[in-house]
Amino acid sequence: MLTKRIIPCLDIKNGRTVKGVNFVNLIDAGDPVELAREYANQGADELVFLDISATLEARRTRHDMVLHVAEALNIPFTVGGGISTVEDVDDLLKCGADKISINSSAVKNPELINTLSGKFGSQCIVVAIDAKEINGSWNVHLNGGTIPTELDLFEWAREVEARGAGEILFTSMNHDGTKSGFANEALARLTKTVNIPIIASGGAGSIQHFIDTFETGMADAALAASVFHFGEIPIPELKKELRKNNIEVRL
Image (cartoon, helix red, strand yellow):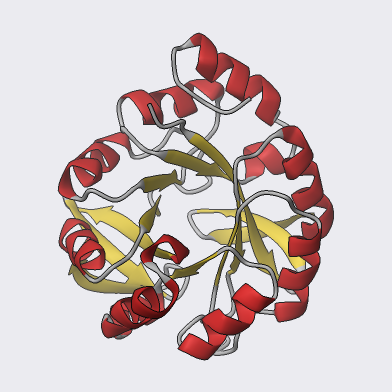
């Protein structure tokens, strides 16, 4: 049985880790390098680093930050934000990233998924999908959730898999930062729609929420930010509770 993964997320803006609610009202959450080192020591399975303003500011991911974070880690490291070319990916992998995450650039140029998975391998390519439920439909949003599209979450997930993505990072914009639990109904549907791993994101507020997303949402991994950044849920404690509930995790 594959173990479930716990993944802290560093949302980076102006060189600092930030956290908001529903993608807005950002507050400072600490130094990315210090947080990365702490999460590796706590037993996180992977780390995700998202340069959340790179696409909005039409610039590349900050390589210096990626390099410093990578040096502090001994666990798999995914980097996203402002990635749109083979050169971007090549540079980030050289800086220490193990995987890269593409989002808006994949929607605007779906062939990019084919190109990157063909060159670097599907195991290296994560497609992040920010979606919002509106009148019962899940619509994909771009540029840090600021631009709504007519693209359906589940149709896009199917296409993403067909084009060679190795994993999907699904963030529910409705749940992001609310600490009300993950979008488990949508997650369960996603896991039945595709055969690649799904990372759940948006809504973690308690240990029970993680249990629910693995049991009900059938997610392969759960990503969270503020509950880890502000010490509300220590990762060792979370993993022990998951084990108690017969959810396989690496201790």
